[in-house]
Length: 391
Image (cartoon, rainbow, N blue to C red; front, side, top):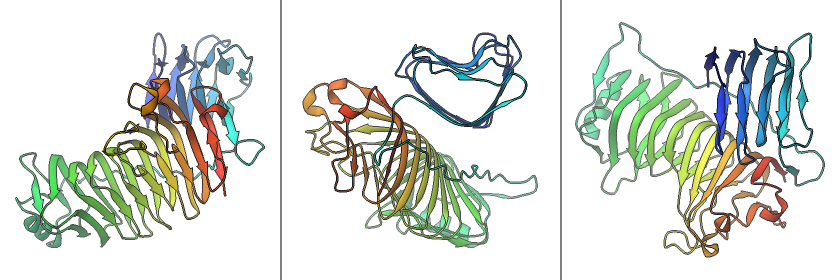
């Protein structure tokens, strides 16, 4: 996100069988912005501007893969998209004024209710950036959870955790008071003993609190009405959001997300792996840009049936751009027998592609309520540019 590109000499972005998710890109140049030569590529480009300064016959995007464009403005190019699959599905550009592409999907789309597949167009909130001003004071975290909690309760706003050893937490660390930023410097906090909850976000004086560059060993609970951001780190223990507040997850490894009714989540570059339970459960409102998952091979001890990717429940709304379903193993018996996606009740709109050895791919892509759902045989290609379900 928030990428400015100018004066590239060969190509802006060259993609070789990867999922590329970008938002708020400003590109200006005499070469194409994006080029891919494989049907396994995926581009998700949102809220961006592409300006061509070369020949007016050039296409801004050349692609034979899948694509989601949302609110993209193009000018100075002869075409917005040149579909190199050979199907003649090019997207032309206006000659005299900028072309505003509200929505364009290239590749297989499916609406389980019939008709045209449509996105949810959930509202997007930018990542909150919390940084101290010149005269703000940093506090160095103590060696124990009790010392760190005392610093928070004494009114510290900015606390840094040195990357020396794990700070043991015999009680959950409660983020409250005036705290705005807990900066890890690759620090480590760890729930110990009978305590399984590492961090609990409660109401406080600051409307936003951020935990950044941290390894959190233990569950994180968000029970407040304010905004919490977990950025550039690991969470090993799960994440539960039951309050009416907001969550931002940015560049985080972890699984076992449980987003409750009334909560809103935005996630960028989410990485979740392994186990028998859904990696991400949503009953609130969740928007995800870039989600790489890995399934345990079916037949393994931790997940005899493989790993479900996500489950939508309780009337939740979930929109995913650029999912990568990576199934591990090397033979057919390792293919998950659980569905990749489940929509028990609510609305979902997802774009994704598969990865791994084809024999190990999910056989069931979507379980939709009590119905038959969507099998992999119904998907024409390595994934779906848009798969929608409502119930």
